[in-house]
Length: 178
Image (cartoon, rainbow, N blue to C red; front, top):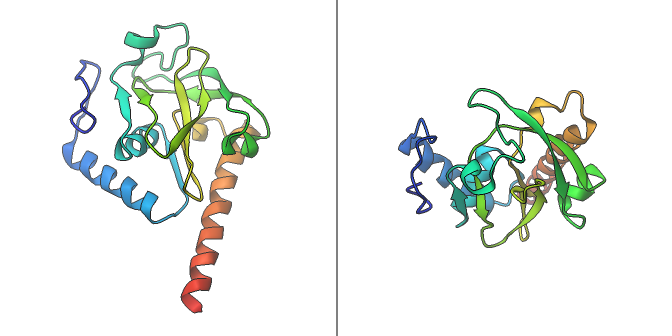
C-alpha cells in the first residue's frame, strides 16, 4: 500500500519492502525496454502500480461476494470474464468470453496511464490490462497457468507471449548484427 498511497488491510500479508522495490523497478525497466511482458496476478498489480495505477486493498469490501475472486487464502476459484472485443487479448483467445481460475483479494481500481482494461469479471472488477504503446505487454489478474493444460484458450495466451518474446529477440539480434 505504501507504493500506491493505498489503505492497509488486515488481509494484506507477507509485506516485503525489498521485494516490492525490486519488482516495481523491474516492471518499469521491462516496460521501457519494450520486451514482451506477461503479468499474472501479482504481476498485474506490480505492473499497474509501477505505471501509476491504484489497487483496491480487499476486493470483497468494494465488490461484495457475488463473484468469488478467491474462496480462501489457500484456495483458488473459477469464474467467467468478459474480454473487451477490440483488445489484443480478444485477438489472442479468438473471442470475448473466458472462464478463469482466480486467486486474489487485491485488484486494480485505476487503470494506469498508457494502459487500458482488456477484461472484466461479471461484478465489474478489472481482470486484465494491456499497454497501448508497448509492442506486447498484457497483465492478467487470473492464473492461466492453473488451467492451461485443459483450457486451450489459456494456453493461447502463453503461446502468444512466447511468439512475442521470440519476435523481439530476433529483431534485437538482427539490429545488433547490423
